[in-house]
Length: 255
Length: 310
Figure 1 (cartoon, rainbow over the protein chains, first blue to last red):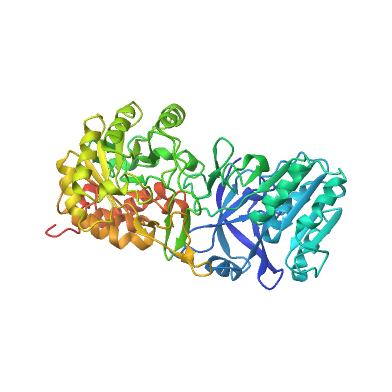
Figure 2 (figure 1 turned 135 degrees about the vertical axis):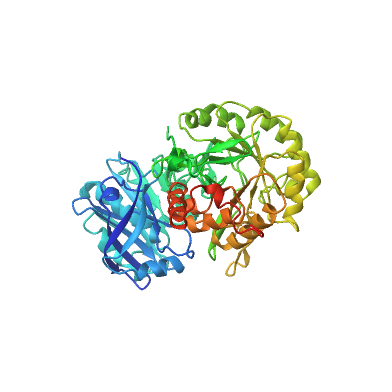
């Protein structure tokens, strides 16, 4: 089975915070084959503007129901339109796209920041709960909803906030070196802003642990055709949309 | 093989390149065609124009390469491609297994390089050459050749001297008079022209107070440019005898029909491929529906129908 284009029925939208929403869509053709770390390309309107599709990571999958969810921040025109789409309306979705996370880890540590936590929900769901730990980085305690999304999927949650309003004060790297010293983890999975992923990858690589990162680049087609999202890899060019979005941290040269 | 596609009602001949439908794909928006096979039947597309190819591999431009703009998008990919050798060894064999004409878009730094590329690509499986003298995103060559009639002629002559394939010259809209360039390349022996390439534009991030694109400027495409493209096809059609492939913001059959009526013998879907990856196939159905509704039996009866005195 491969990628497909479907008119997906919106099952529900849930307000997670002031500007973050979760949307669940019925799209069995995509839900049944989507892997953690893969994404979909969503057409929010049939009008000439906004013109391009918007890529969203698959956040959670319910294969029995034939649904999956996406988590998005209302930022621009497209996400504003998406936020106003009603239940039972249809949106056109292409997916699943790209290469997801390697699922071979026995003792995975997930590290996410901001909306980068979204694809980690499905990743956590794919491991047995007892084996997964997560480090969540945020600006303030305001984005508490993430702890609720992860609570039934991970064994231990480590939380950092920039202002110290919840968990340890600082970035995820405030707790990471100490955690890695324990020698507990055999793979670290990171998704978040580029500077955070670079900093985490450096610490994890130094500790001698394999590290996967999920890149995000502006993309037009999501199919490997337009080359908008291409970046420099070790010894070759990488397309974030088809070679990625998930890469081993050592594969990426130009983040 | 798809024989008698649409009962041959849509068949056109673009300077020696025979296509079963006038609907092709614009270079750089359809990869090598293979990327779209999950969504459409490539054999139901008139021709696949592949990504701009250069002699040596190119990494393209650094920084952000695309951004959406009102009813369009800017890109500054900068001709990233694996090079002609890779194309011939790795990609062309796969394309040969599909029964669809292949147009290879070529770009070089000098007229001699264009000639060398044309010679290299004068092989079975390549059905036509499209000369890219209108890419706004590369420093050398590219647009520089397409904005001056003298250098455009030099490139066309170099390519014609080195290939047995039909030669299509892709024109830039970033000129004072596109008709002048079209006439010059026709005289130089180009078998057809395709227009328009992207319009040079830019966008500024008002928070960072800097241009958004890594290459500062980029090429504007999408529905926003369509009226400009239709106007240019209409002007060029009245001046040249060679066939025109019209393109610029085609998002549906109605848009394609506008170009045909303006004098284009074929059309190309570009940015529209990103919005609907099936578009290059479905537009043909739409053209047939339009022809049936209007009582038009053959596509040739509608090409240029909107031109004066027609």
